Image: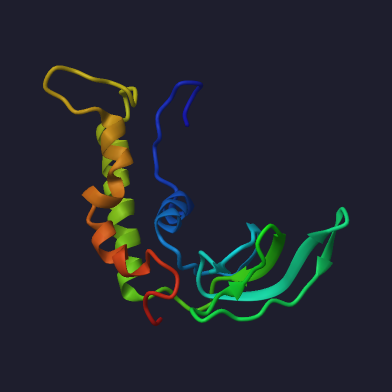
Length: 161
């Protein structure tokens, strides 16, 4: 930002990548995550690819390591009325497939266009014949065409990479 109430002069690539990742379950670039899970069913990791490193159960006011059995759908079977902490590594060091790279490019170009076109206007500007600028940004994944390319990556385990 330039000045206290300035405008965006460039769209950071990392911001675009974060927006793209918020839309899909797949991760490129490994990282550690921890989930707290209430038991009673088969739990499936919401991110992919995943390597579960530790499963703990809350007992006697402390976490204790536990082993869970595999469920019929590839998840972990949890016990009703129990709380679990599952630590895992998600993501891959492989390069993203061409569809993901193209989705990133589309979203980046679209976001850059919004930033350039509306750089001197407030995000909530509204006029009689104009759509809110904020709506363009909020719908950027769809309006840029990136959503169509990302559809197979929305759910963990949906496509082979």
